[in-house]
Image (cartoon, rainbow, N blue to C red; front, top):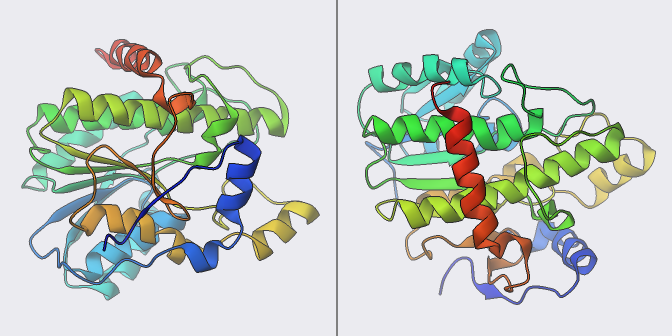
Length: 309
C-alpha cells in the first residue's frame, strides 16, 4: 500500500482549504525511517527556518549529507551546529540570498566546490511578506524568492551537471487555489495583498514544477503541500489568527513529513502533487495548476529574467 494514497479533490476552493486544514494532526502521515540515505547529498533551501530545519534534520537522521544555502551566516552556523547533533552526515553552508539573482550566481560555485552530485533538491524556501517590496533586480519579493531565485539556482545546478537523475521536491501551498495568475510585477498593498502575492507564487511553483518534469524527464519531480503550519510565515498573528494557529495548524516537525516522504520514498508518481491531508491529488482540468499554456509562458518568462543575471 502506498504511504500517500490517492484521494478525491473537494469541489469548491473554500471547502478544499477547510477540509485540508481540519484534522491535519490525524491525517498527516509520518515518513518512515527507511530507506537510508547514506552517501547521498541533499540540498534544502530555507533550511534555517520552520519546516526547512526539520526537513534537514530528517534527511541527516537517515544518513545524508546536507547543503544549506543561507543569507545569514551567523544564523546558518548556529543551525549547522544544532543539526550536526542529529546524524553523522556533513552539513555545508553556502552563502546565498535567493532574493538576489547575483547572490545566487555567486553562491552556486560553492555548491560545486563542495563536491559531488546532488541526489535530492528540496525547494522549500518561501516568504509571505507583510509589506510590499522588490528584489534587487526589481521583481515583487514573493515571486523573486519563491519562484525566480529557485529557478536560477536549479538552472545553474543543471548546467553544472549536478542534478543528473536527481529528485526535485518543490514545496508549494494549497492556498494557491485563491489565485489564477503568477507574474513578476504584481503590485499590492496591505496584508491581503501580501497573501495574494504568496498565493500567486505558490501557483507559480506548481506551474514551474510541471514544466520542469516535462522539459527534464531525467529528473523525478514532486510537488508538495506540507500542510497549514504554525510558523512565523506571514508575520505576527492577531487574536483570531493566533487561535487558528494553536488549534488548527500543525507544528514544523509534522509539516516536514510529506516533503520527507517525497524526498525519500519509492513508488511515488513522477510529476505528481502530494498533499499532507489528501495524499496524491488528481487535480481537475479546471484547476489553475493545470493551465499548461500559462505554465509554459511562466517558464519562458523566468528564462528571460535570469538570463545574464
